[in-house]
Image (cartoon, rainbow, N blue to C red; front, side, top):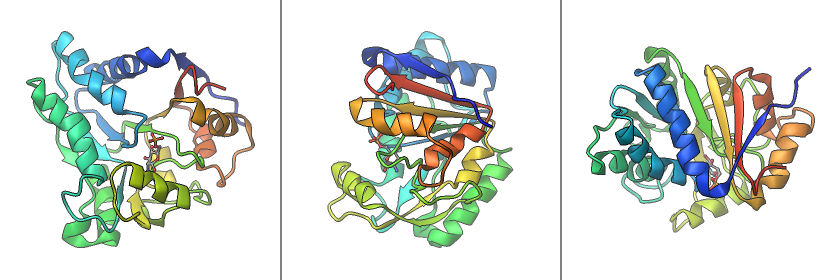
Length: 243
Ligand code: GLP
């Protein structure tokens, strides 16, 4: 039996500052925070706001460890649509531009060791860091989290995945010229092993899938619904996405 998680509804204009404030709270409470972060458009306002929030509180994030949630395969190192590049630009460069130190960043070492080995290394690196304290997630239009596409089971580990057509199309929107067909992602089991999970959803186009995530029976067909098994799930939506 799972209960419907509480949804924190925030006005769209305040979303980035609000979630950045919550992240700063976590960093203050646990300076060695190990936090997995997503790319996509949803968290951009959070990453934009975070340096200012940290500066105002006299903090930085240098002792935290940032873990990359997922990565495309087939895009060369340095490609602007690569998730490591996107998170680097959106968050790490922003911290540095605000005069703050960059936290250590665990990305998938797909170029160095290949995709399969990069997944094993990522799991090992997370374990070595003491496990994930927090995973922040966007919500895919088809209910995916990270690149855990529909059909991903709760026991799926970090692995190579085939991307759904809508995820390939989205990659083009993020700057990939050729849509990538595969990726690597923290698995559902890896995400569910975190101490806390925040699922973020913004905009009216997420309203229907957020409703399915929260209210339909748990199913691998909507991987985000499986997050409801986790007692530390927090759902934060703007007023357009909230069902
Ligand atoms: C992408 C990424 C996810 C992201 C999601 C939502 O395909 N793999 O990590 O959270 O889809 O993207 P957006 O925030 O742009 O809606």
